[in-house]
Image 1 (cartoon, rainbow, N blue to C red):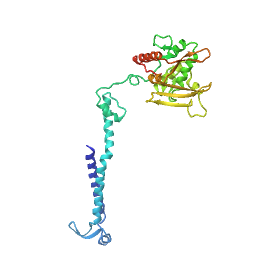
Image 2: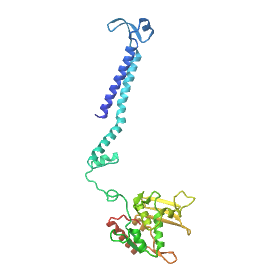
Image 3: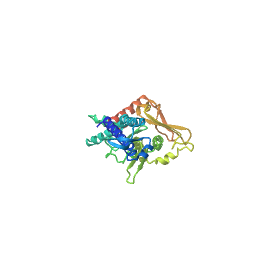
Image 4: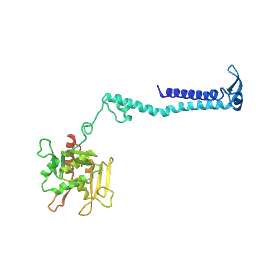
Length: 322
């Protein structure tokens, strides 16, 4: 039964109930069985012949009675008019709820009701491999730090993770690894956290990509909380650093500014490789004996090299960041 018919049925029922209740009160209960003296004392009542009865008290019709019946009719019409706009959202919600139940039996589970119409008419569903078919827990597997390339191969590396590969192959270059940890830990959202269980299993909270990077710093031997405390500003509301530029889909990057212990400020930025390469003018190859970075110009041949590396990562199904 549609909403219009249901509204009409309810309106007629309400009108009849109100009319019958009024008739019973006014024409049966008010003047019936009253004596002549008491009958004449009531304005609505009249003494005389009524319904084949001689000398009886009965309720007489008054002009206000038409107004009362008209009010009942207006109330019924109001219910009929309001039923469609007020009942339509409820009908739609119920229809969508029923659709969700039916689609679930077809192994097509929809979490949002407004998606029922779209998913119900879909003939082919294409899904990506990350977050849909997996637990949405990413792990850093390959990295290029300075001029060195590191790769962790499951079952083929003696180390247990990429952090161990970097530590073993980056001896005497702790300053470069520390710079990598700074770039990761000081340029992540505070809501992204990684905790290790007693069995060593990493538990992610927040952005999965950032959690994978934070997990890499844990593998490198850094404690994110204590590391960030060294860059916390007393007069700043941020958890660390002095300024943060959130991720922008237009610029495809996020950045953070932190005060260096030796003085000055440093801007850390991460994002899509192409956009990062466009903003890059120099690279850090390594650190010399005085712990100063060896900064080299970012030449076109070096850019071609890293762009080819990124392309190979993407062909292998890796999510790449710079």
